[in-house]
Image (cartoon, rainbow, N blue to C red; front, side):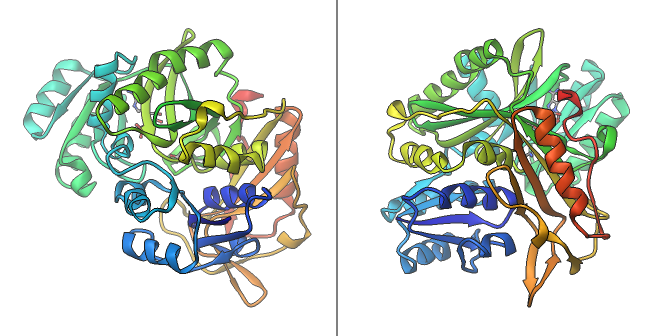
Length: 420
Ligand code: AMP
Ligand code: GLY
């Protein structure tokens, strides 16, 4: 079949890499793609936020199966447009994508199905929000309701930080995403992510992971999209996983179906875990980046069968075959990220690196210029490795990082410190 992967990040490169290994994939198209994807697929330029352009591309390229990588096109309804045109699509409808695009909506779903999560209140007016925060006291968590590229959350350890955060949000720091705020109880514990496929009714767990959101070692510095990840997450024991499925995930899927907006795609649940009890922090409606890179490395070609079963509503009969392995992904970012950074610096020595089922460099913000490889984004490369133990995977990944010659880049040296 002809398969499209929509997106241009490390997540999409990893998805494309896994899908390509499956004999069912006859032709792979990535749009818009990056230099890494161009080496394994035909890359076609497209504005991922233009649904009609994405549909026209699918028709022109005779796409049989479209895999949507990121949340913005999903929240924009791309899956609805493709499905309405008869194209098999992996990714939730616009209505179901509200689990990520509105934090207030997710809270409402948790209420309706009694899923454990932080206590909360919603506000559309600054003074009422400030009065509530003052009454509750710190620590407390302030969230812009809508999509804010992972930046719309303020975990305020001091009351003043919470009040300042409210000023910023109502001043329009996150645009329309901040027209409403959700104020939450601060939850203490260890965070982990869980990825579950749902065909609208049945579910199939794909794995757990943990990521590092802060830019610098020791989990210091500004928040980023993620500077590294590892899978599995040790804190997601079998007992915690089962509780999460029974108390949070399946009830959410059931509630979405009951409302007539079934969730079909990958549900990425972020949990706070304390004393063996998971509580929901948030949902995303796509794979995590760079968490996806570790999952793809572990699962390989079977990913395509699972995504197809999900899109064709056959998950009840689908299975994942797990190996007892571990994967680690280290993000190489341009110096200055997540602030401003230079574009167009050259990355050398990538060709000398191994590229196999245990060692992969997934590309994010890269492009080629003749035979030179250039960095053109904030997060640029995801050096990913697999091993029989966490340590083996991590050592392998850092050994590759050491061979890359890119003076204008930086990376964290402590990815997975909790798992060691
Ligand atoms: P979110 O975008 O909702 O995942 O929030 C970003 C980060 O803020 C999470 O990964 C947590 O580290 C933190 N966070 C969000 N909500 C809470 C909460 N209620 N209690 C403690 N930390 C939180
Ligand atoms: N790495 C976090 C995310 O993809 O949202």
